[in-house]
Image 1 (cartoon, rainbow, N blue to C red):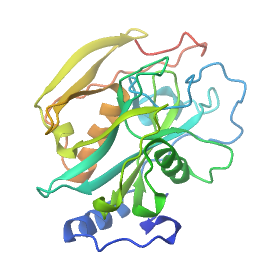
Image 2: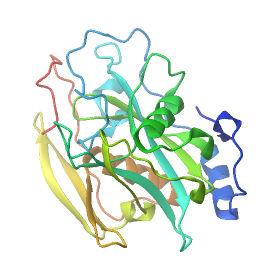
Image 3: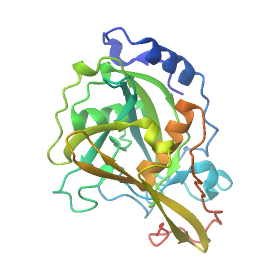
Image 4: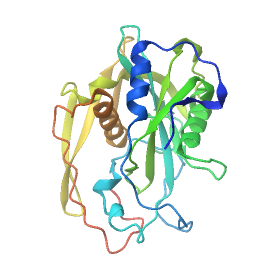
Length: 270
């Protein structure tokens, strides 16, 4: 698990007492153990096409069959960065991106910075911060990594590890989005993801089991509106619950999974 530290030894401005307390709180969090990653099957057929983690349906891995059947399926690993900072009003905010309209799939969707692990990445922290630097120009030395959350399983059975980092000096971050991947960089209040406001839910079904897909609508100060749903919403619900130490004010309702006899490209959430 990642410890509380400043990546690459970079210098940071002095954090507020709230951010110091948050870093201390989160550094003690221990995610539940997940299935083994050894000897991943490199010839698997289920894989996100672009290497990016988009706003698909997703669930905590412990709620899925992988926790009970680690030998039957080894998914490809990815990581996303939940980068938190203190807003001007003193609230905790999270950095998000709007996917480029040029992308052939999932264009214009909101996601956290992140993507698939590459061979040179030593851990999930490096994957998340490398991807954030490539996508939005966030220097890893500005981010104080405090913990990682339990992996989530994406629509296409991609294992996504959320990495929580704190941006102490928000003024030092000047977003430079990669135009091929990102149209916009914006931020939203983290607490909104455990409030029952500006939220809708839709009951869906996968392999005969029902679950709720949550969608949040956020209007920024510039009056732009963003829709945050699926995997991204699920990750942020979990992160907000941990940070604020209370459950969401609504029912999450994950499905009661049954492991499929055959895992192939048709085994996706709908």
